[in-house]
Length: 229
Image 1: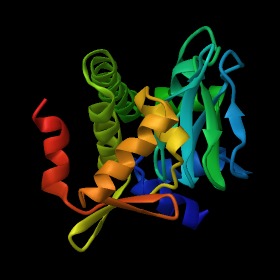
Image 2: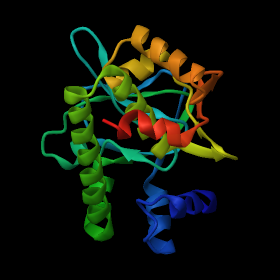
Image 3: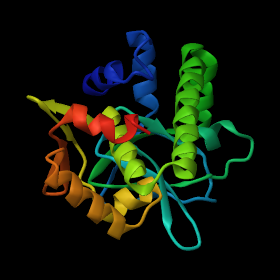
């Protein structure tokens, strides 16, 4: 219990709660472990659970007729699944899949709603997070509409830098293992275009790739890829 409470204290979603409140939250959580590539839930399925990521990464995605579209990638301390839990209609609007071995803490709908009623900070945090995610979605729509493929790839990767970037001396590591197909699904391009652009950026010395992990090696030059647009 103490270990779980200590983790919750570091999660922004719960950080303002008192210790006794965190103990109550911890008592309600269900632990689930998933292997890589497992669907946590599917679009159109029942939405009666809220999730917090203890370890690993989860992609939120939608299936179209011809391809998959990755809407977001969440990591340690992030939460997801709140929209269906809050709505009267509890149908999932997207799917969630693990990108690696992942441990989740799960709150059932009735416990989640109880927690919101007991703790005024929780609805405020959900609203703030929802607004941030809406701004990101609007920016993505703008990019898909007006940017060329190279710029979309550069901006898409930089969103991952902002979310999953780890400073390594003068470089920034995107702490995710990503295939070219996943990058394509994240940026509304195709795998062949991603491969071409990534090779070009490596030749320019702007980034390097080792074991599917991307490192930005020239941050200022990288920003120019889309700041000039």
